[in-house]
Image (cartoon, rainbow, N blue to C red; front, side, top):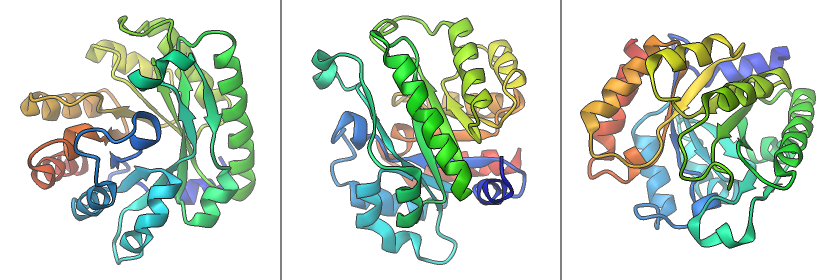
Length: 260
């Protein structure tokens, strides 16, 4: 990681070296999910929750750039790729494409970029995905922009199956080895497995929130558990903006992460 990448990445973190991010990039993959129909309003609410960063796509960022120009606004982590995962698009098979370059994202105002690296994809899509991520990482290094690689088990070969820890561990390590500044991924299922995953990943690892849950105490407990296992923080989306009280939930998550 270059000096410029280090400086920019560290600005995403709180004083304890961790981060709480709110993800609002779901529309780029899943379309207008319940609670995300008025995406501009969701971004404004998310910013009021004072996370360390917000993850969103380039089009939505351009519609909400004024929010991020305010004093003490969250940093911008821009989603720059597309992955087939929505139920309505599964007929098209596995596919991954870059939608804008890291250089373009930086010119729009991104503090970092995020890309998918999908497990369990068919017909050579994993290799194509890996090549695209590697190309973006190399460009981002040249311009000093951090790249967070999101390793997800969303391919057709693993859909509706338990996460294969060995494969997850391998691909997370590959993401780190090809130059990812940090990795975002699913909780592998147990504290022991998450600890192993963190220990074998030589870059900061963030856990993602996953589908909406009504077990909020379980969400807070899982967040503390992830931090105890060595995670660098968490990235939550639906469990914040699909809830009836996003400010309250995000505030508790933010303070949990900042106080750890």
